[in-house]
Length: 326
Image 1: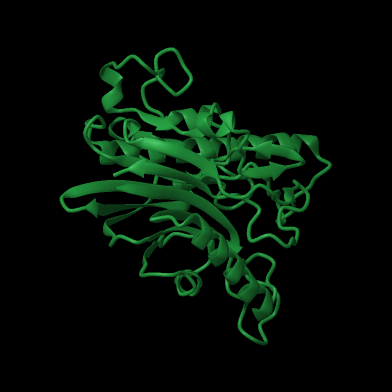
Image 2: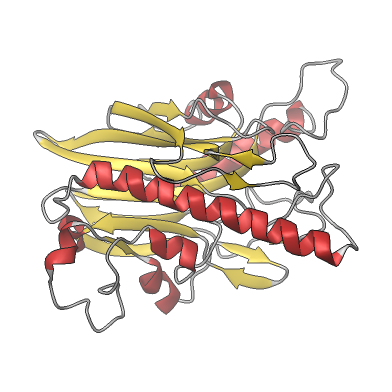
């Protein structure tokens, strides 16, 4: 059977604050009920059109919001949501036509990886040993007796937040430090996801069907993204791709080159097209992979100074969806 597996950052998908609540710029909340209802309809319209069997999602504010979304979708759906949101309240989740089992939550960095600096040292909690947004792993059974393990993540953004919750600064030393802190965290989170992938692969990726989905907040050739691949070499488009070796059992392959061949992208940042939302598959799925694409051809542009500027699209990311013969 052909199945559609995808990932989509839903961009601040949160219910509005209760009536009478004071505004809180540090929490994710829709402007009002009408704005929220319109977003639910828009998101449901896109998901219905791409018709996924399983979709990893990012930036979900609550289980109630996810329930609102799946209630608008045709058919029966199963959901799972991370118990570990970031301070704004957004987290990763999964919606699936197949029942979800073996649900795993992951936040802690793996053994031997020390805490990383995320703020200037004079600020409380300037170091962390956990992912900013917890990861999630689930198991599904697309056909009787055949399982698929899927992990979903949302790594640290390249958008910088300076002390006082500011998104801009004229202090170039501060800018440089906070860019490094973001990179430290994104790298550590990539290591954490690689550790989770190792658990799912069990050193047998030539036989085990494993997929890692998510907003990695970097391109497919970025150092942080490549941490997830495992043993170097053999990625699509390289000379080693057609030559099996002992590393195949532990590798993950990014489908990004197939998207880039089509001119695809998943976000526009400062006017530049980027592919930062990724689908990675184990060796066992390479022969079963059929096609991959991005779901939206028109997106609003994100800017460093105004990362949450309003727009009329369902999200500032495009869904990335793959068809795989399961």
